[in-house]
Length: 269
Image 1: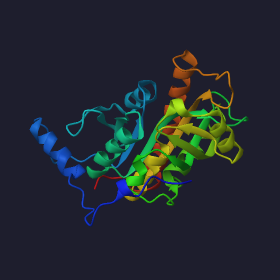
Image 2: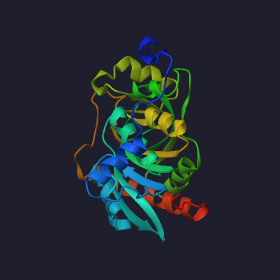
Image 3: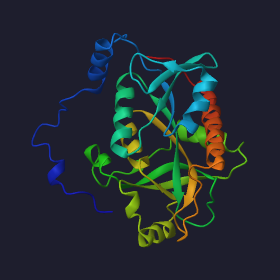
Image 4: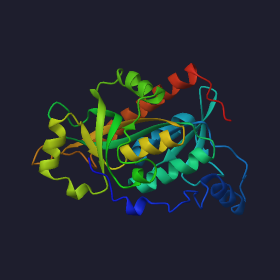
């Protein structure tokens, strides 16, 4: 696909960022009376809405941290872990990841929602995003337009394996990310679906690019909340079915986290 204009991506000879995420967050923590030297856990489990995050927080006994209001810290199988609320939209979501990575996070397991682009993926299924089609603007400030968005490391593999124990079907593959959900046209949906793209969301490709850029690992599981490929747009937003599906997805995230913690050293740096 064609990327954005190069003009607004030009650093004019100096690409040094003015704001450092770690320094900024530690300064804020200190101003608020917290421990400015505290470390974010290396493994962070997260979600975009409370029905995805609350079961994880409950299972880990997570409590508010000094470092950031939407980061809680708990314990899973004897390991200190983070639980985070991710804001909607690529720019906001990647800002959170930048800050958590600066404070010590190295692995993310994130639960979200997505709309299916093709038959065979049903409401209530899961999509595990292993690559992304970049139609959000944030990722282009990190990597050039031809750089692939990928999330195919240990965190993704742990989610794929953990999802096998669910009653819901799961589909690993490519996701289309766009900043404009009300501009998901029928033509694009058909075109991308025919080319193997599984579903659409607002953040996946940016999260992939930023975590790779910062040397972190990302696993992203998305509940299929709606069928974008159908003109009548079946969806389960706001229903008990949706909330139950989010809780089941949280269980998958916890199983994947346990596998990662058992399989490699996730101690804080």
